[in-house]
Amino acid sequence: MDIKNTIVAAIGLLLFLLSSSLYMVDQRQRAILFKFREIVNDDIGPGLHFRLPFVNTVSKFPSQILTLNSESERFLTGEKKYVQVDFFVKWRIKDFASFYRSTGGGSVDSAIQNAQNRLEQLMKDGLRNEFSRRTIEEALSAERGNIMQGLENKSNEVAKQLGIEVVDVRVSKIDFPETVSNSVFERMRSERQRVAEDFRSRGKEEAEKIKADADRQATIIRAEAYKDAEKIRGEGDAKAAEIYAAAYQRDPEFYAFYRSINAYKNTLGKGDDVMVLEPDSEFFRYFKQQSGQ
Image (spheres, one colour):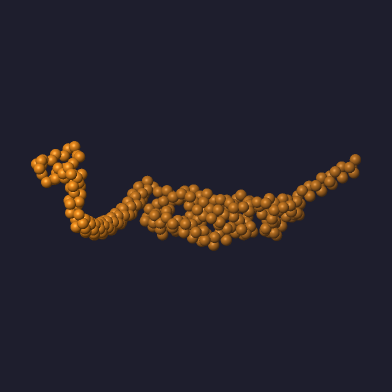
């Protein structure tokens, strides 16, 4: 019976030692292996690993990108006006041994909190410096991207001391005190109105130029058309006179008859027309000739 208990105890001890010797690192983590609190391996990747019980200890740190969301902070601009700024930082641990040492060598949660506190203060100092050299309008314009890029570059130089890498820095919101907001918006509104008036005045100037040019072109076209019409009319009148002269020379009586018929057609047959003529007027000369001559 004692032998059986001894075997069971030995198997239990073996299982305990085996379970204490093996540890798993998640794919979203990296581990540091210690030997009596001294680092022996600072970049253990995902998978199943072995350690010496009671000799080695393991600390696991996240390897994915972490987010620092800062509370709203007030900064003074180059115009000596305050703005409320919200920002966030994307960062990750790059050198796990340096990160562990620089954050005090405590637990993982306390190390991350310590790193985020120091990173937040670093970002606030950088933003305070950037905003102090710019106006509010510059901070809201394309300069905003330059601020973030410059801050990211500068922060990475300091972040190396913490063993971390700043992936991205973004200002999520910029608010103004009410008095500042009213003055800023009014100035922006006035500037937009000035630009709009400038565009309108230039548009009116261009419209007047186009209208004047169109009027000039229309006058030229009408003059050319009138000149051509007069020329054609003169040529037509000359041709008609030539035809009339030729007809008159060939048969004066027929020419006189033809002219009389055209006169009858143009004057008679209209209900409202009234003509007062003597019966023996020369106008009705061909109506009196029954011989058809």
